[in-house]
Length: 363
Image (cartoon, rainbow, N blue to C red):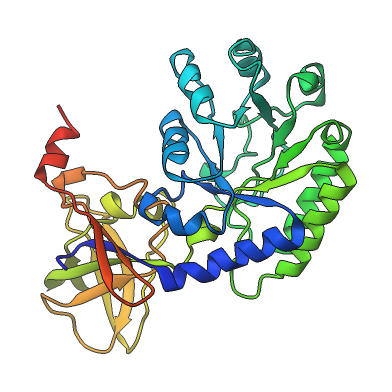
């Protein structure tokens, strides 16, 4: 296949889905795919066998979840616009409001719908201020009991989303205890609680049994149905970005330019100033660079057995989460195709992007 392209390997996706299924069975918690992280719907038929539905951050994600993924469709947005509400109601099973004001503003339109409210517990695991929902002056959810209590009878559930790449069960448990202590009296009035995503429970050596026991205990103590919203946890290590070296040069370091761009195709890494991942061998160190005009379009530095040359193929690992949903047409760089490696090893091309896609994205 012509590079660049994202390659999703079902054999590498399955262990994540099986861990989700195990957690569902042991804890009773339901799992909803977070479309903000991964929305490649060609995989939804497989993923829906292991998950209970989807959760969204916008009207379009709500509609995609309803159309493409069997099961429940949860509708959340930081702020709903008046012209969106009718479609949101028609395409979702639950709607979660970010603030009391939004809940009250759309009380009439949503009166026959299952409603929830996002609560910000004031603690999180994010190591990045940019992604920290509990950062100072955060707009993400209600903070104060006195603001929530008067509208508690208008809703049947809460969403807490305060984990971010959290691979520590102890840290998760500590924050959940904080939530129970601060909001327990209100939680007991609810029927369901979403604990959001960002819990890296499909990672190596994660104590899945401890998490299952903790979730089951929380659900029993408060008599609620728990929802989790895995995004990265559902697809971690399942996908590569396949690229080809176009040119090489030396300018204090060995540099290789590939037919892709971190700004256009792995934007999340550029935003957080993180390196891409690659399986490394040997001792010859090369900086892998994107082909856009951005000076900092750098995937990272990696070690190889031999010097790189034009035509060499490279694979960036763990390229599924927050990549395809953020890809863009900066510089008009060719957008990667999307391919799936089936369980029998065959590769199926599911989407290519052409000049017409570039032109029609503009005006």
